[in-house]
Length: 241
Image (cartoon, rainbow, N blue to C red; front, top):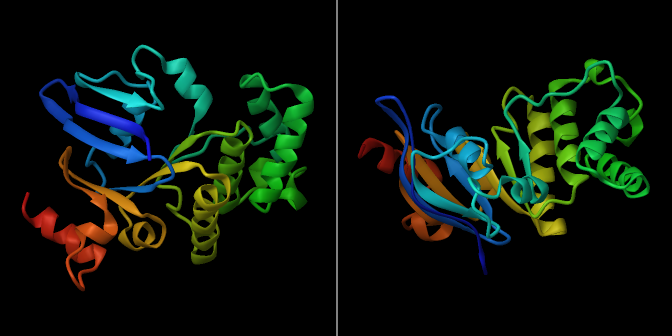
């Protein structure tokens, strides 16, 4: 498998504070990669650097073969990003919001209409596609966020705490959608989360960040000792810091 993400010594400093410290890791094509760590570990800052939205203070990154600093536009075309708080126009319907996103991505009108309907169906929102997004629950907004990613047919998606604030049913639906991105669409997924059970349910490969550093990375099956849970693995590395 080819590496779709590769970093070497990736670092981001804000004054005297180091948010991301010499990060070196890979994500392979087809992975569901769990980017695991407590709030403030540097996960979101890392995603922003990989997307070309924040410049590193040192080190390098390649995303789908492109340098995020020099070539941010190809990355934006090929990569989808679902932030922790998804922004939509509340006074537009779900279909109208997706239509706006399609135009921003310069999708042909005929193709975008088909992509929008397929995406709404995929995330289970076809029946409410003409409902104002201001009336959506948080779980529905998160699913609409995934639909937004799907309409541009990405090769790679970054999901930043996608289940935060959802009820158990909403969490189940989002996790099933995440698995289907990889299983049915062949999309590489990077799931940034601090929720161990959800990472264990969805991810085949993980990276654990603590205080801006990657303390463990690899296949989940290889990182855990015999009979060890992900929680035990996480606490073992967390307590060593």
